[in-house]
Structure formats: C-alpha cells, structure tokens
Image (cartoon, rainbow, N blue to C red; front, side, top):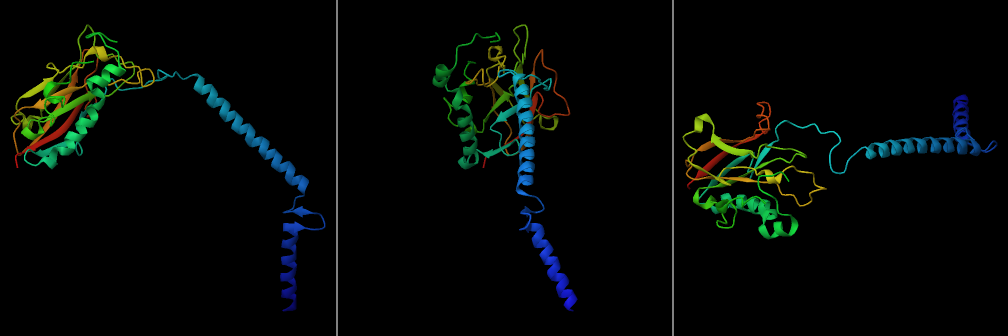
Length: 271
C-alpha cells in the first residue's frame, strides 16, 4: 500500500518536472533559448509560405484583364429569363383579385426602373440602330406608362423576356437582329390565343451589342422584348415556351431548358 503511494508521488513529481524543471529552467523539456529558436524557425517558415502565396496571387492577377475574361467558356446560346418570374416560373393570378397580381406589378415596376427614359438620358449615350455598338420603348402597353397594371387587371398580362449578358457576344450579323417567338406547348396550342410583341417584331436590336462588362459599361441595361397575351383561355394552365432565333447563335440544347429559350406556366382566373 505504501509502495503504491510512493509510486503515485514519484509519477506526479516527474510530470511536474517535465512541465517545469526549476534546476535546468526547462519548460516542457525545452529551455528558453530552444523555445525561442523553434518559434523563430516557424515564424520564418510561415512568413515564407505567405510570401510565396502572395507572390503567386500577384502574378496571376497580372494575367487578368479588368474588362474581359482571360478565359471564357460559355454556352453557344445564352440563357433566357422572364419577368415577373413568379413561383417556379408559374404565373397564376385572378383578374378580380388584385392581391393575386399586385406582387407581379411591383416586380415589373422594380425591374423596369433602370429603363426609365429620363434615367437613360442621364446615364447612357445614344446608340445607332441596327449597328453593334436605347431600344424603342419596350412597349407602349407593356412599359407601365400607358397601363400601370401591365394588363393584369384585364386578363391580358405582359411578360418581359431578356437574354443573359455575355461579354463580347455578337448575336446577329448582316444587320439581322435576333428575335423572340412564343408559343404554347402542343397540348395547349388552342389556349394561348393572340400575342402582341413589343417591339412589334420581337427583336433584340443589334445596337445593344456587344456587351463589354460591368466595369466598361457601368450603366448598361440589356434589351427587353415584351409579350402581351391578348385573349388567352381562362381558368386553365397554359404551358408557354419562348425562344430566340438568330443567324449566329446555335439552337438551344434539349439538355438545358434555359439555353436560348425559357418555359413557364401561365394561368389566368376570372374569379
């Protein structure tokens, strides 16, 4: 029993000596000079690593252009999107219930605010139509000027379509601008009714291209095409697909439903 206590005391004493030895002035088995050298070594080591990392980042940044990506791997056809987007690209509302489409109106007003004529005059230069280098009003009844409800109160909603921005893209040649067409899926072809496009031919005018990036064109507002559904069937789902046609852009791939086209569901209720 006494031997066991002595062993415990001896083990405790050895541990205390390892942590701090008053005879040799060692902390955890090292003297102050030893600790100083090892800390100095690791300080220099990590400073060298940080310096190498900073140098390689500096060299890499020298290869980058502020205005154009050094490497640009993009789809042959840019994506398309609509406004308002709704929930999962579904636009459902009732003409008699203002709350059902009020959110769409706010969404369109917010999206179109940079396209205000007075703002455009202040921030952009006048462009030459049909030449690469502001589009007519995106459209009368779909501009929010003549009809502040964008037709939603009458069951004739406006949908805005835009192409995603791609630096350096030339979407047309021989003065032929890309244009948008919308149609219902085969099973809903008799429900969609007549459509009106703004501009009338549904084009993205060439004068908006090419796009040179946010730094070169700080106030750039991409062109829009507005589609107005004049007499779509009520109280039923209509699956709509809009696509862009161009003589320089490849047709959209079936693997990517947003390459050069966009599909959405429209439902207009009368109650």
